[in-house]
Image 1 (cartoon, rainbow, N blue to C red):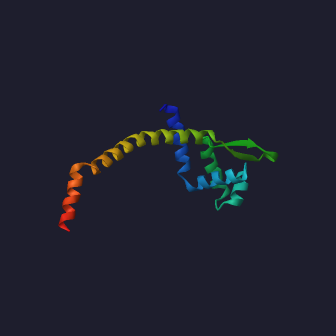
Image 2: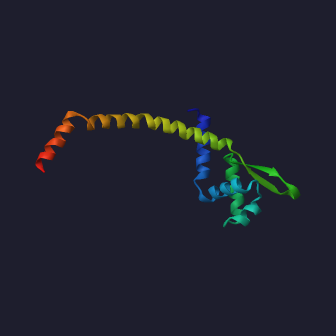
Image 3: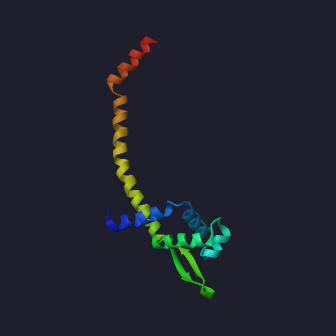
Length: 127
């Protein structure tokens, strides 16, 4: 996997690790662009804390700041970094799926083997 994809995914995962940042992202997803004050009115987080979280989210590329009326800044979601993180997870899942499928097939074959069948029959005679 290219290093830039890993770096983007790492920033996204670090940003998503905090429940307050996830709440901010969820709020922006449901209500659309909002200022730090708007978010503080909707969430149980101070405006100052929201501003710090928004800075980290912007650094991760998950939000972008836009100038609004009267020197206010509105924050809008950006989906591109999240899509990169999803691609990273999908590639990781593919890397896990192959060995797990091979293990499943191996276990399925071994449970149907004659030795296992003989063991089951021997246990049945003891009962």
